[in-house]
Length: 382
Image (cartoon, rainbow, N blue to C red):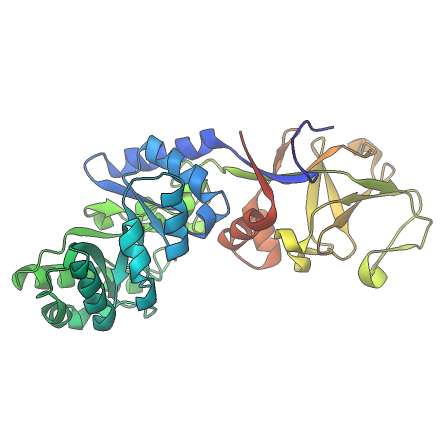
């Protein structure tokens, strides 16, 4: 049985060597003359924000990026001193926390910018912000054609410091490049127009993970790696273009084994009926842990390097697998026992199941699965 101090026989393993190797790969690709802002939002894509942030800063990152104020506060309370950029504009009511914990927000509206300036000035400070520019993704940001007028409306305030200017691409990970090039051209023109109007854009950045792999012309002053930090590809178009090492694996132990009679059903709905002579083993992991219910009957797991099918409906906290020693004698399928380790994602006995494989089967992306697996599962750093 696995020797681990867990309250539950299911856990996520995070390979710290893989995380370091991925940062090294990024650093060597973008060079050491520009900054790297490690994106650790969503609990570092399920990998554990505090642990990953500390490791990435040790491995070459200059800054960190989060999505919410709470995420930034969590890092500060863990003793992290590095600059923290919030990639979206929070509510005005969150400004006191930004000031207290020294978190740099993205700014997209005049009301928020002036409120930030007023509160910072009242505290005797000049607080930094990064201007988010909407170049075509049309999610958030100041419209590219309105940037200069926007800055004229807020630049008088002594409580504000424009520390950086950035945008985000909608199709950098797509094979089609026309929309990406249009966004990049708009962003370049924004930066040029800012300088012509005597506004210093500060740290210019727009390179997400896909851009880091595909478009060196987007590196500017800083890059913002996200998914590639964790050894996962942003899409199929980056396969083979960068050497990444997946950091997350999912492990569990068999908690129950039975040999149902022929025709007996398993799990909700009894949609699986047992053939004669097979074992059905229970694993303590389910859809509340991120194992999508839509994968029921469509996924495999690894036991001693052998692929075994998941059977029956995936439950909230558990799922079942089938072990058929007679299915194919050439494969020498081994019986399972309570306490045996089973791999849901990762390497086991010379074989590997990846998040990409699971995402393809579930009709989603690796980002979503990684974030989901990290929410409830205990993390073990190796």
